[in-house]
Length: 342
Image (tube, rainbow, N blue to C red; front, side):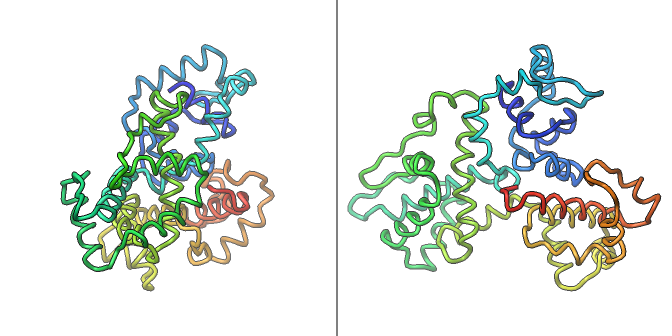
């Protein structure tokens, strides 16, 4: 765990340890998600759901004792020059491929469903295989998809080849060797893990670094592929269902006040939904929720780092809504990435 936390410090400027803990364990408030986005760690949201406060505190204390991180102020730390030397750059490079924010809630279920689907399509009546899954969670979607479509071994093979070709070959091989066929026995995750990644939390992080890019390719393929049709329900589980309903209602033309009134929600809750929507949707229309006056004012500020400014300080000068301020910050962060993954 120490090396993983050190790797996270190496990927950003400085971190509040209290917020980092909530980030890793998956607390999905708009404040935590926004903070994670601004410090470039949103893909790690919920990556360690079983992490205890005691284990986390012990890791921070040990890293500080070894002078790998330095405390800048109460609860705020940054990696030290010695920490940068000790950080494992090879392992850290793998972390740049994970995306728990978009896939972490259902990634394992997605892979199990995909593996079962492949097995059922490739097996023959002459040589039936012992089913990998018996739960309706997996058997029912596969049965339904195969009933509605003529899914042949050849068509699925072509589709998977296209999807896997988007991955580095070693990552694609790692996943493909866990699938089964008539004459192919699947290998376990542990059998295939490189030696450097066989202990927690690196074992699950390595698996995620291979799987999440594949799930992203499937998500991008939309309804054009069998894989997306099969997994779309599980992929949606990564997002707040209440937020998705808010999104649907706002897109239908309802105002924030109308959504709040119709669903008996606080306006602040609807605003939180909008912020979460902006974080996951690359095509989010910021202009629809930031008034021209507020945007013009924020653009006029002589500020080089909008992410360190407090809403209260801005509000004292110009009474804009909090959601406008937060969306402006997200917009500026997204523009600063210039197409970078997060």
